[in-house]
Image (tube, rainbow over all chains, first blue to last red; front, side):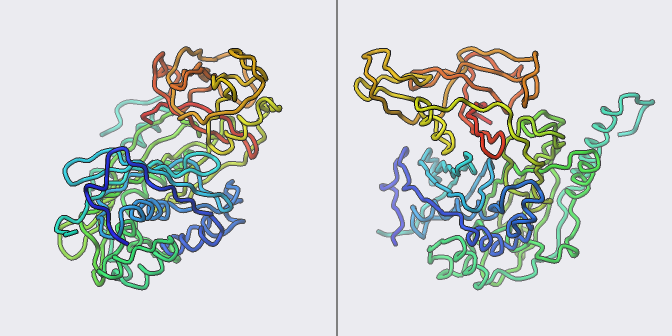
Length: 139
Length: 329
């Protein structure tokens, strides 16, 4: 896969949507891959005992999925500089997480994308992701 | 700070004690933990990419970690007993002791200064940076606690930084206006939510309004439109007031609006709700007005012209209501 070039990125450009089925396997495998062993991310009974309706995504995974959503679009050589996430409703197993995004600003080499990750209860994550393109690249 | 004189208002003195502790912990500055259990390594990166469904090959090709993995390297692992203490723990424990036992994370902001390379062992340093409260929130009265973590490699230059904020709240005995909780706080204890009592007020749903509530369940604000002349109308009804067509459709609104007018309801009590609450007529850029609650801000912060965004609140296991929050929040 190729990385986008400057002339391929316009302010207002809309990123292709990404839809992730939050199977229990996704919730558990990402929690463990991020070394987060808090029971609410892998133990349904434990999660229910705390008042949650099911196990749900951990924050390290939300950060990882937001990053993946943007780099899926930019291509592999873009460099992620910053991810700011405002956390909303929980993303429960059995739900679906739909990402959409828009390029909102360019400040010198920095591009910023607004990303929204929505589940059935509402916004799970509202994020801004800042990235730069590799400068020494020849097309 | 020292205690001066005798306090009679225990609420205030416990607030002072919390803020005093927060100041003390903030004054400790950055407290470094021990080095990560494992150096940045290919198997953990591969495992992480696999779980995330991230097919970006450049990390493994270049021998660098995905930036969003920064925190993974210094996670404590399964055996929590060996967890190091950070300046944050005492503040969270004091909040628990004061009855603010609920916790939801609200913000996670990470800045990546350079990629973490395979072979280097990261160290996390934590700085407690602020306690704000008590504040009224949708989940109950609470404090916002903020801390900063910086990850270092070999030298003094940081690899990555994170600002993390949680709301520690006093769970309501009965969930009166339950807003959905956020994900758990990885550096703190996990989210606690009290049991959800059924919300006593059920919205009227019929053939005219079913599309609207279906939209709300999907996190969409749907506005009825005339399938013939296209005019939007709200609340939904069977006949277009403009061309009298009974053919209807809907559009999905952007979910933004401004306060056209509002009231603050103090009395009489409304079942399932905590007084006071704000009921606003919200003007949508699409051209219709809609009635809804304004939440996530104190009633006296609401004013005509205030910019809002739609938010969807689970009132119990079944009912989700569209509400409005300040756009900047």
